[in-house]
Length: 172
Image (cartoon, rainbow, N blue to C red):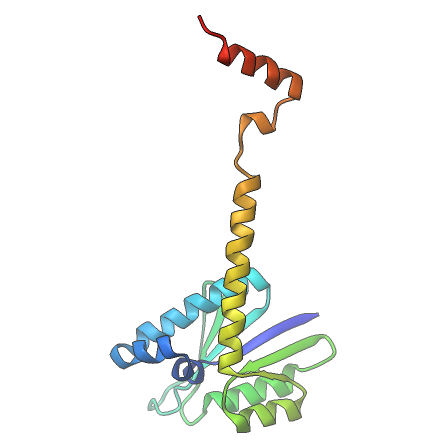
């Protein structure tokens, strides 16, 4: 079973406070922050993340695909919105072998995606999911650190360790 999370990039940027504030100064920085956040999420969850950005107002723009830290990034062609691309992707790929969730707060887009057999997640729900995943990542990392200190005492037989400890504490 393949799980995809298809994200309407600019919709998420405009609905997450931190990214929206960043986009006022630099839309490129806001895009890069979203990509970094989603790359971490993808690595942790194992869900295939696809982020679609509108480029339909860019004259003579051809559809562009990039891979950024394992995330598939798509810039739509001239006269094609992210919504159009996402709808086409869902219609083509939804099946019993594929779970496709679409992240957008555009109600009409959510309705179309549901009608095509996909699932929807709002920008706010995705933000909460990301926060929870980050908490779990931090917890898992700290837990692994406690258990993976790579200490000699963890590798030694208890008798050998006791003998070495006695030698260490012996006063000369």
